[in-house]
Image (cartoon, rainbow, N blue to C red):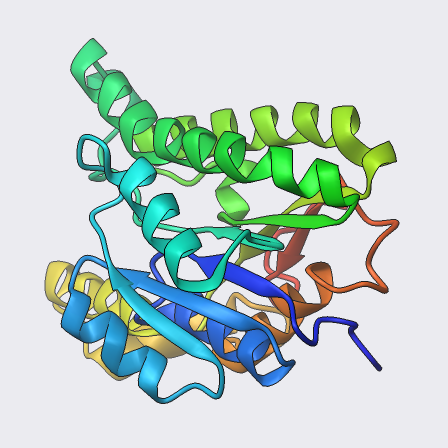
Length: 257
């Protein structure tokens, strides 16, 4: 399928590893000039150097002024952006009964405020051109909140609600806004989660991994490239009639429709 992305520009947040990197690679291979970002400038440049069309920019998105600095640097590097991919780590785990005001503020500061600033910065140019793609790499917790991740559940749901509302406001002007919800994908983060579970329970890592994979109808973890392909499609020209949608990439893990 011709995705119609040749010559477009994209900013992919937190793209030096994991799902962000897979998304950046998929877009770059479709002819998009990609801005790779991460806290380490050297790491961002290293990853970008291994892609066909990319530049690397170091930035701490959640630091004061981080979103504004990133947009300025991205524009200086590649011009106005056609595609914005939102991505980043969530707050620390913890039960809902221990949630306090400080924790709620942290969730919003991490998962909502920087993203809203990025969106509001790129949206005017997209609307003027009549073409734009905004994609949030989120979590299946948006549809099925996960135990012991109360702050992440809160922040990601808030961002999803904002993006869904905005999608309806700009759909007629050629801008689509969607969320892609990963399940268990074979990334370093998934490995860390399994290792932590093995240490916590005293079980062998192989046993923990097998149990986790057995809970997935597909019987395995997803591959990063599979996730990246789904992300690239949602950013494509043929996906112009898909907006305000949360698509799961989870091998059937979430049991709801």
